[in-house]
Length: 382
Ligand SMILES: *Cc1c(COP(=O)(O)O)cnc(C)c1O
Image 1 (tube, rainbow, N blue to C red):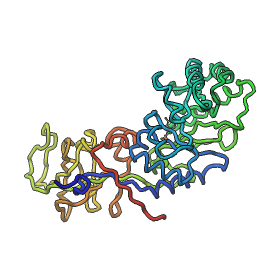
Image 2: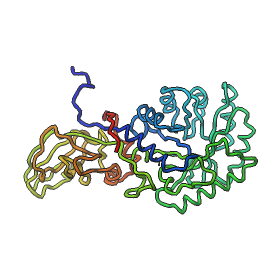
Image 3: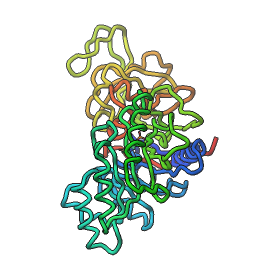
Image 4: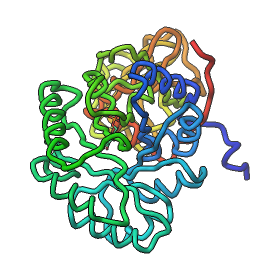
């Protein structure tokens, strides 16, 4: 048997870590010097591979890493001690004891959580770092902004905890700057209600990628939490963030398996969902929804072959996808097909792929399955 790693590729993703590093540097350059960079690397670094991405971002100068779960924090700790890690999501009580083992900071939203972690801190060699999250309208984690002072005061008396930061999260930074401004105002008002607050040693953070568009250059904020943009994807289609020309990091590839002709008038695919209006040449691609070409791309997505756009015909199936190559001069079995990325002068962005899939880039990146190997390639700077 051929070892699996040496088999030819049928469907794969390429991750350009040099582009990732350049993106971080560009984002940093667009921000005032005092702003610290929290690299959000949850969900396997948005499907790009946690270890590879985090290692490169450490090299590029990220100040802190944010993850969603303890197992992600544990995986990140394998890269070494010392890097500050922040857990963004609430923990279930059985997880509490592992917080000090992996030396992670936790996000707290309630007096109950303060008491829970204070008990854990009593058993650990050093206090547990906590970031108090204030809910300014998202309605997810965080203490509701008008009640935040009670949790802050509980933190002041919790001897086994160290307040490391205060944060909030925007619900609409990608499409409603007015509400984002209101969330910033609620956050500042909550901070002003905290007795004896000294922000000088704290990380005060709110902005995700889309927040950078309207970031406050003065004021209490001194850190940003960036996920999507460091991967070169804009949170809104077609909108450029001020001063940040991020380049794509991720591309998604497959190949032509079979090329064949079918007569006009034929209804093809599962459910006979595509009717061929002309004599057609079709290519059968060696990937399907089992790889992450979601079924919503049926009869609407496009792929690149030989630098030309080819429409998807009929339903995407688990392992194979049919595309129309009638207008191409030549197509051969084995040829590379781009699902996301560029070929010659043509390009399909994660944003365009996601629009066909009726989803958002974040979900697209999380939907590339385990079957798809991630290959790390480094491009030269531009
Ligand atoms: C995922 C996440 C981010 C990063 O958001 P992007 O839009 O990907 O930049 C920031 N903050 C929190 C709390 C998150 O959950």
